[in-house]
Length: 375
Ligand SMILES: *Cc1c(COP(=O)(O)O)cnc(C)c1O
Image 1 (cartoon, rainbow, N blue to C red):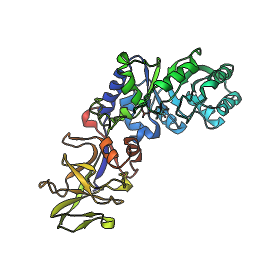
Image 2: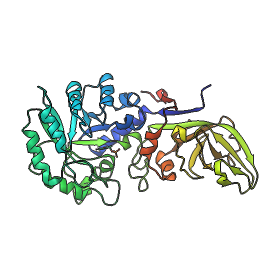
Image 3: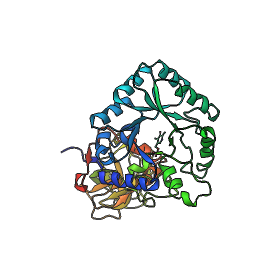
Image 4: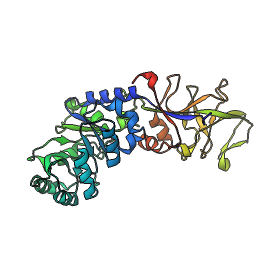
């Protein structure tokens, strides 16, 4: 028998979440962001459910190639653009659209030998200060691109740093607007948080968003609330696209003063029962998570006990007398019973975010696709 741990990808949840995001920005075309192997879910596993998107956005040529191998003929966007000239050859070969965020990438384009011009997304740095041309340089960059025979249509793009928080997007949106006001081309602005928090209620907003022809949906597709802490996935009507489940492989009865795990960091205050779960940090679970990090045991809430080790962690069974050897433990997502444990809650307990947990799912964890739920 294989070690009792597996992840489950839920295509129906992906479909539901994609529809949900479409409702948030009904006039925009939606990029399904599938970088980092679809946020750890696996491009091949999510492809069918997300094929209703208008395009796929990612970073790596190899991932783009996998999408083409799956039969995707629609748009694919490289979010960081080309890193070297060879990447532009791959763009020509695989018909990829790409972001242009600096002068070096324009130089590369100018040196690229192609008869078929390429669709590019000119990225403006509106305040994130990661990638993009300064607003004052936007027009010059556009003019340079527009003069190149290698370049087809030019779209305009920016990325918000605070769509999920109190600063919001108004300042960045205004900077983008000013920088691009007299430039033609499609606009591509929002991530999940901007779509849910700012598109959805645009009508009531004092500062309406600039029109966005394309939006870039990432984390919310996978069922996490981008603004967790303010809102839950349930609030946004998002469903978990990944569940991580393992089993209890040992049970220990403790007396007052007994300790659990490395460093004896947990000390039992009185008699208690714990279960040892076949999941540790080598599976992608957070070592930093404290005792009390939520889990579901046979679909019922409990918490972790003591330090997480490489292959195991402990959970409290004191209030769950029927739980024991072989009981299902859901580390995040959906239990077999249907009970839910949002990945955001687990991540928050470990001082991180759902993005990191999803991407950290270890290769040794087998992944199944939830076919029962229909695909
Ligand atoms: C990852 C990424 C997104 C998606 O962001 P989410 O917060 O996951 O929705 C959008 N745009 C760019 C440029 C990205 O790199």
